[in-house]
Amino acid sequence: MASLCSFLSLRPRAAGALARTAAACTLAALLAAPAAAQTQIQWWHAMSGPLGEKLEKLANDFNASQGDYKVVPVFKGTYPETMTGAIAAFRARQHPAIVQVFEVGTATMMAARGAVYPTYKLMADAGEPFDPKVYLPAVTGYYTDTAGNMLSFPFNSSTPILYINKTLFKQAGLDPEQPPKTWPQMATAAKALQAAGVACGFTSQWPSWVHLENLSAWHNVAIGTHENGLGGTAARLTIANPLARKHWAMLAEWQKTRVFDYGGRQSKADPKFFTGECAMSIGSSAARAGILANSKFELGYGMMPYWPDEKGAPQNSIIGGATLWVLTGRPQAEYKGVAKFFTYLSKPDVQAWWHQNTGYLPITQASYDLTRAQGFYERNPGTDVSIRQMTLNPPTPNSKGLRFGNFVQIRDMIEEELEATLAGQKTAEAALEAAQKRGNALLEAFEQANP
Image (cartoon, rainbow, N blue to C red; front, side, top):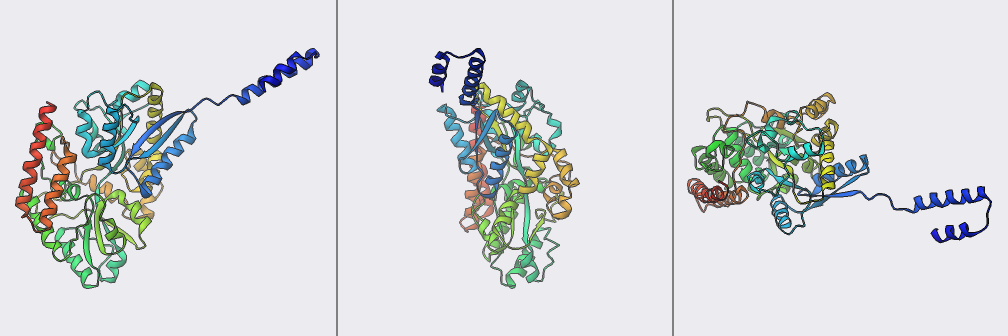
């Protein structure tokens, strides 16, 4: 086009024709010029399957809402793999702007001085509205510093709940509208289901999160000193307590007859529930999307069971899931886009859609109110159980949450010891004592590195 315009401009032409030629050439040049490039923002995450698809939709919808930035989600494996991969990438200066980190990585991220761009500062620097008060206190308290500043952006917060196969409950003559409320009731229902031909009573996701961390909060029992680590790095584990010993010992007893059937760490037990091999499962409230996508039975919901002889139970459960951490060392233009993306994710309609389609908690009061106003809970009875469970009672120092250093590794140790208990290799008491001793050695090392 440039050579043709140059050629035309050299030919003798009338003034009007020359003007028209110049205008045409200018228009052609504008059309031929490349559009201003979007700023790309990499977002490393740990969601696959139905949840990964919904995460991709959030990014695509944000990208379609404006033309300056493009958020590019990149699946990096499990939560531990995503976190360790991001740390390694940061050291190699090949890291993303945003990384999704699960809740037990919070203390590690807080200790990564110079690596994290705190969310409250990012939003202020970018001039984006950000009021921590609009987020649910049970969520924000987990991810703020001692001054109340939010260090990461709340994204997918969940809590463990009870799921039941209502179809199998009916076949066994059990009331599908009355899920078990206590652990003894769980055992009674499991035996009735087995008598009706069901192979296993119940299974569970995330063993440490469910059967130690939330077990303790639900019964208002501490699992560590210094408010479960929220009060500082001098915290030490106190998990070898009577409640945990009783619970682990009973799980081991139930395992012998498959009243309880261990399915592995993280969410590896899911197929046992999807296929109807087990009639009940305790798992993340966000497991709902995967259950609905992979099963054909009628699904029911209940709160976590509790031990009725424990004073103060049930109290309230604590959150899991993850937040979005922003890493330093990226071009400044990316951070403007990250801030706008966080503003987009905070919109009530966006949060309500995410909550309704995944089972994650609505992280803002406005998104919860909108979901209720839209009649979602009326159309889907039981889908508000996670919120009711989280807010059942005002949190105590034992049930606000936890924040231990090196807890990714400590959780692995806890689950190793639980597996030894279930296999009959150790008593519950010996396993918990070992997990406490091993864990406290890591906490001591963390405190020395982060005084």
